[in-house]
Length: 168
Image (cartoon, rainbow, N blue to C red; front, side, top):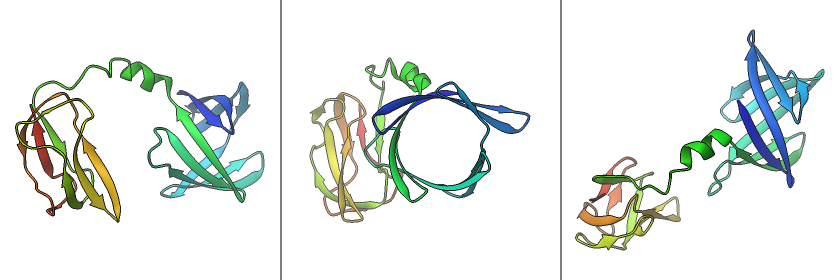
């Protein structure tokens, strides 16, 4: 697998491969053979060149491919770019087709409805605002079309995975 990682303003090329159960890594052309184990979700124990490291990796909310890494008493912010992802998403401008269900990504409370049944909407236009853990999250339309059904109202509590609206 080949990826690029932006770290501290510099872009690094990383190639990862498993050979006979071992992880082989080419970092900017330099061969490394780390022994890495995930000891708990988001926490890795890494042995590299006779030195042991613990790395805590968290996803940065709102950043695609963005990571926060704590290792060796230092904090790093990294942006991971997978060239295959870019190729897969080249046609992303093409919208979803047919009826689309808008699903609640998290449990919360509907604090505002921005559209009504019958309204015409554009792709990524805000439909609803859900409050979860004291944060408000705008739920957007997956496609251009018409709001066929709005299945929630302001003040209603919703569960993760619940259908909020249908766009046709």
